[in-house]
Image (cartoon, rainbow, N blue to C red; front, side):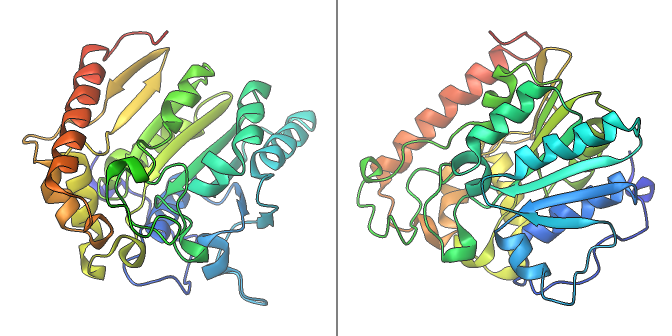
Length: 297
């Protein structure tokens, strides 16, 4: 796919988001891929906070805001309703942040996958509760400073690893799952198209760099996202037909120290902690490479 193949029509036209917000980039691209026959369900969070100001809603498709923990349950209900009426050409899209997905909405997310309803769940992951002043979430990475982990003098004082939502979805034998990044827009766009063609539930976990929460200049959003992939702190993966594979492999890997030092949230990490995290990252990458194109247990 080339950039010229991306749909031209816009389905979100304005917001009060922070400069450099990765969230709005992710939503804009997803809606371009899905088109006007789409219904959106979003919980409380950054996205609803910067778009829903009565009487203004910048979405050009139907949307409504769900209770925090209920996004997946509503997705399941809306999808079932369309199925009951024989309507098959509407994309039912849920867009939840990391808190609404990995923490508060985890049970309903799991149950919705098991239901086998046809919907797309997009987790827009900025790795903390940014809407309420940067509290730690289940996807906050090792060593990151948040308002609830303000002085992580050692890695042992913070969560040791992100909750692996991709692996959780795969463990449910979901028909389609992927990880993505707004810094690799064509890879992401193609995955949304594949999710839309899936007969059943699909899940995309997209990393969205957050300038104020991560502590980097607003013009560096895309660069930071690329560094996450190049350092193996974030992988671009796809689960389809029962197998996991990489959809993009960097030509050159960079040390994770370069990625960490580019963000203020990791400023308290000591050299020993960075070395330990590099070792953990290397082990995870080796395991993924060894199991590519194999069926997970």
